[in-house]
Image (cartoon, rainbow, N blue to C red; front, side):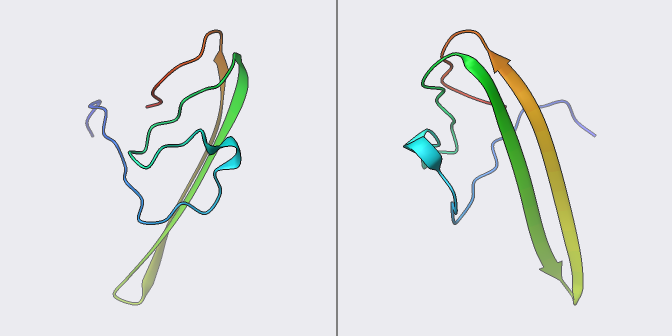
Amino acid sequence: MSNKTRIIYFDQILVNVGNCFTLESVFVAPRKGIYSFNFHVIKVYQSQTIQVCMSTFVPIEIPITAMW
């Protein structure tokens, strides 16, 4: 497993409250605070379903222009 940062691009964005997530897969925090990030990815491959779920809280003291 690698520690390299990678950007995951999605074909479809279903929820983008506040329009803070750009089409280039970059989150731009509009103000400081605590942000909750929830990801749920489903992939069907050869009749088997693969699911990945992740949730995290990120305190942001100043606006940021990228999230890894």
